[in-house]
Length: 317
Ligand SMILES: NC(=O)c1ccc[n+]([C@@H]2O[C@H](COP(=O)([O-])OP(=O)(O)OC[C@H]3O[C@@H](n4cnc5c(N)ncnc54)[C@H](O)[C@@H]3O)[C@@H](O)[C@H]2O)c1
Image 1 (cartoon, rainbow, N blue to C red):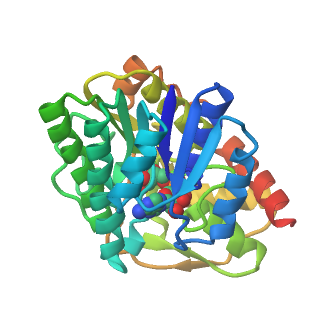
Image 2: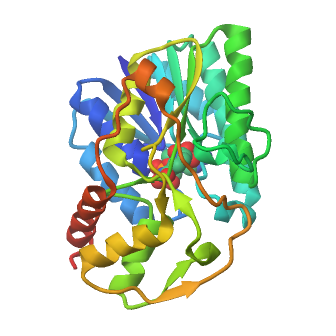
């Protein structure tokens, strides 16, 4: 199977690419290596992927249709896994245009490639943020999701709707994966675990939003990879799945585990809820278990330990 994997230099894209390469699939990775966070981290991930003979990387922007289409045609792509996006809820209040370009225009281009090349399966990243103002927990894929509270969430929900129309019109099998707060080695520098560890080791205060009254369904990267690879291998019409740990953890308990594992107390700066943020997330994963065999295995403390081990070796601390 020849798979076009977008966002290959990103956190999740890197791990999914590596798993696919280990399984012997041909992976054509693309990424624009944008500077939303330090591109050196993206390059470091890529240098690991480049060690595989079945990996090919091309730097390009999803928003430019012609190079994307020509590459996919030349490489005889059969399956697409679209993980490239402008990620991050908070930054979508700062630069909404980058979300329109990568997540809307970029995704439309992906759909057009899928249509023109008769792609056998399109798997794409959605997000738990689509649940927005919904207050019934756990979040189930059967709930209506019409109240996104950030433009990031709105673009992710739009992807699900755009995929639906392409599935309806052209019969392209599409699977959307709503990821819930993914963490682990090689993680994103703009997310809580990375930010907290970084600040604590540099003796700076950590920012605790909504005065600590938040809950998140933290999901370890290896579990996300398992669910994503299963979706890639199982085309099934039009589907949306939650990929979450299904265990909502209090932000203050999360910080406590980091403090215990680092053996130091964090200096905390308590702040109000950030616009665009939701207070709690928790995934109902019944359908993902049934149809993808999705079974989260890594508990939070183990996952945080693995992140810390990676962080120490990567930054030499
Ligand atoms: N990490 C999470 O907790 C989480 C949660 C929900 C959804 N998601 C989604 O999962 C996907 C992967 O997220 P991640 O955490 O790995 O983020 P990431 O930022 O590490 O990876 C995304 C990659 O896409 C690339 N990219 C962005 N715009 C592009 C464009 N126009 N053309 C080509 N490449 C482009 C970036 O350079 C980056 O390497 C994203 O779609 C994100 O929205 C992530």
